[in-house]
Length: 406
Image (cartoon, rainbow, N blue to C red; front, top):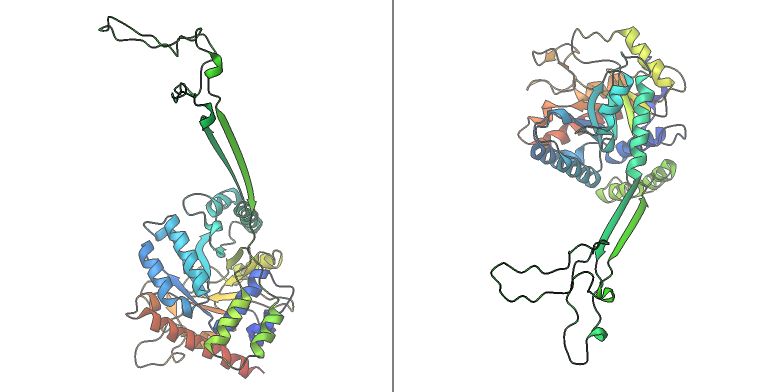
């Protein structure tokens, strides 16, 4: 168990984002959370592209991360990827593909970067189990690096062929047409490719010149043009978080205009990918015990440039230099008539092993950074309003935690 009083539990997101030791993607997400005042991640457990994109459009303003399960989308395609990326860019949230990798290195590399899903090409974040061994981390990192390099570069070759058109000057002074075009790719042999062969019903035949009789000066030259273009593009890195936060603190207040300005200054996400390790689960009787969790944390410390944090139920930062993010699933509002935070940790579930806690309670008491909500939002009649309600409650718990530990 990590101590609840680790500095990351009591330090504001905006201050944590200023650390120069953080990966660029971690710094970006912390800044985004601070600007949008949202530590809400919605799990989009839906089964069609249209439903996924509609959900993202409805809740995008209230979330910092959208979690997907691409392998349950029946019609997953490039349309799914492009549509989701467009909404994420416009609504300002990151995409987290909940793939839960857990195989040997060679297999997970292919699963991450190839096949119909090609996760590394579009998802900022993904996650993995550590039970295959710590080598799964550098294997996924290598696949991410290779994918980003290939996305940055494109090589295209255009080949065109044709026959030059006869200029007007080549027309005779009598106004007759120039020699009609023949085969633009004449054979170099002495075949009869240019010989007119009349039908057997003709009694009087007029033959065109044969290959040996044809004036070679009338042959048209053909032109083949090959153009190869190598292009390279880079996504902009986010601005210095310290500069960004000074800009926010000097604004007149927490208004939509201030947030829009800060979002614009923050810019697009960095050209990077990040991994979350599954260190704890919210389902009852799961096998991820304390020893397994400690192994995850130790492995993460060896790969801090790629492992951004954990999927866990509490803050797992224990050592002084730990600065990992924690995403916490199993978050939901209690039944009607009871306020969030009143229920105990074991008091609500779905009958299939899942346990839920209120967003305010989790953020206030567990020192985590992002709460993950699924059916509580996805199945709501008004998903935009429900996502906003979760956002407000989670942020309220975060503010109470920071205020309590000042």
